Length: 438
Image (cartoon, rainbow, N blue to C red; front, side, top):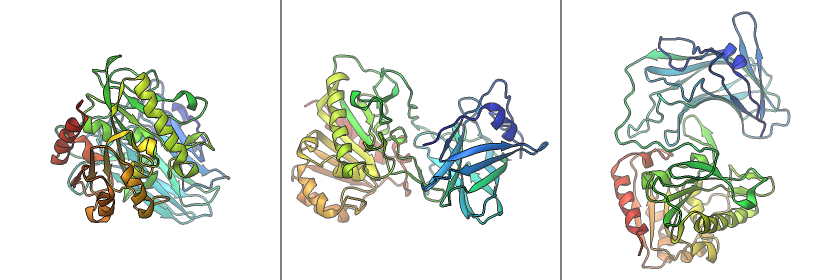
């Protein structure tokens, strides 16, 4: 990963942002002196070229670029942008290279609200305007983002050649509409912070064996946490890194997880968002199950659970494993990979996929061998086809309680976990029942 910071002078001169856009079709202006802006880049260089009153941001893919994605992430002048009365966010982008390039414009809110995007495949020298709908919703009407709390605008290059480049010439919020109204009962997942674990905080947490690497978890202690007391744990795996403006946004990193917070409403349980581990690079595996076909991820999960029970009040009799998409597959592929790890879990919660999905190393033959290792009490499946995974249910201990439910979201995302839909009312009661001390 290549990371550089572009200070407010550069980004501000280029884009001229304001924290709250108030006039239709206005450029996003802000004070350079009081609102510094940080820009994260991956696999590209961001260069400002200013000609008179028409500055441009040029993004150039690294010459060693061999990934599917490269991007520049532009942060807000304060904690968040507020587009509560805006309909769209637009950018004009030109392909300035000789290679075809797919460009995606993302407006990123916070956990579970996902992101909205627009993309175009540009021929050499072609210019297009990209427009993100700030009021875009999932098929059931659930908003994709909270437009009052935007933490990142990302410009991404995909499916192109090393050295490909684009220029961004305008970026603005457009269309004045009615003030956005937040859905009632919606939960806000705490942002991951740096620092020591503490009640009510979600922090970047490393096992002692991971120090000196870039491998970490996101650890949350409930507000009522006290040293010396025991709490259930929800461990959660994230989905695979995947960026498609018309399908989904997923970073593949622990801090994107939301299930555990939604299941508990942030109370009464320790929640840890686990990484997939690549020991070769010393980094988180954003794609796939990690090094050694996931065995290094298995070892990390075992160590993490033992650490939480020894040092942070986790109850070894009340450990639950959860995951979305790739993370749901990992509930079986990783969580039941061996007898020692499988014996830890009292319950499993899997959403949109499960072990045996014929994805990477997970196939039904292997899943059928892993399924009988689960010795817990219950498995809760969300948005999964029961007939597809019936062989696993049949191979499991008959005393295990299987629950199969639909979220109603009708989209590959985790937004359903942060509201009060009937699914969540049932799942929260399910967790309370199964996580109560025997």
